Length: 636
Image 1 (cartoon, helix red, strand yellow):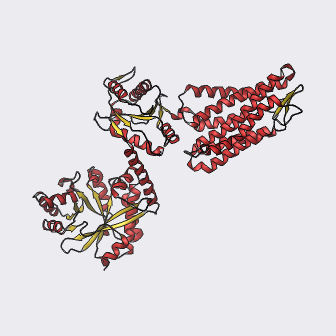
Image 2 (cartoon, helix red, strand yellow):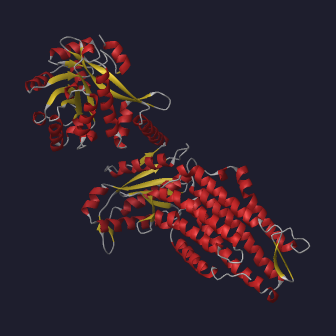
């Protein structure tokens, strides 16, 4: 006699999970499909288990055909469950052996064999032919000689899943998912062991339920992927969707961005703004009945709809929506929106690249008042992909492999000899080619790595000064650039002081160049310069003429040198006037020395020297050189 008292509460909990799951929108990805399949098949297993056990315990009261059918259905569901629980594990991982047809067929073999034998058992199993999983005769239910195939199949898929988890765990997303999928498979393994040890007690399904609950709590809950009160999917959902369909994205993206979102959010209460976004999401569901609506925060929506679709009618409808205030019982908002269309994606791009391209396009239309629809093409995606590659190169450089220090000489205008240099960072791509600073510096700033990169340049410069005699090269100092973001760090002075102490060099041997972009906030600028000035640091104003500085602001800042931007120098050399000479004289009266950047010819050098420039820098003298070449060239 079998005891199935554990099955009823297990079935009740499963039905509750199933009801909740189907009451919420579900993201159409493999793991969601596998999870639904898993819950349904487990529910059927419990139902068939209860029914089959009931008729097996009272076999005399039922027909043999009914007993055979219920037992066959139970065993078919058992084999299918073992496979689908493995499939769910694989769907969580980013690498799946099931994508290879031959391997998929081999992996499906135990399930297929088990299902086939279950059907054969129902039709041909008997005491005379016991080479089946079960057979039914006048004395009731009997296990066949191949009954243990259940355990072989179950352990095969459980162990295969555990191997996959360990092999591909580094590519799994969050820590919650890594440990969740591991514990899930251990629970399945434990369920099989307990069934093997206690076959008369039907408690395996209780442990399987625990495994399902682990999955549900770790990443199966549909609410993880919902936003705006369940009226749209969220940004992580879009990332998961793109990740699964990368390189073969069948649906056509379309974007909508609320203009001046942050200002609108500050203007309206957060509850009103939330209500407005919910109304917009609901309207989009009506406008795109077959599409997937994703809300990516900051007023940004992405819709994935039918491929090749022309969105002109939808754009008109949405534009008309925003011509009037969005009203509900609790909100009234006046908003406007920009729109983004996307060309068909051809290349095999990562989900990170596709999502980043989409969000950048939405930020762009959200920040402009232009009514033009922005179209994103393959070139935009390639540009984003290049930036992604550059980020990886920056990370490699910060680990100490790929960063190089270059120096460009600065010449004394009176003597024509080198007096200093500017330190410049160079990073190579994975092919060994140098990435232009104009490409990697903005990426480093956007990714938040500019502080670490700047600190590395300063450290290498100090080490160069320690290991090489500046005097023997005719030099007095080296300039090191500070980005605007670096200058905002409150502990910048302490960090740089500790580096200089480490190498035992004086602060006046390293001048810090600040671009005009760093001078937007007077108070921050003055406070930082005063703090670092007390530690002995000296400052140079770089790229003068391209930013926001004026004489009044410069008087408040303790610069020792002003570098005139190369564009100003070139313009003056082409069309001389009185503005630049008067400006240089004014700077000198204020106590600043002057550097002219971008010197490319003797004529330019002479012209800049005649109007009062003290220092000259440019390709006439030298391009930036690796430090070993710089030493070979200038060491006396």
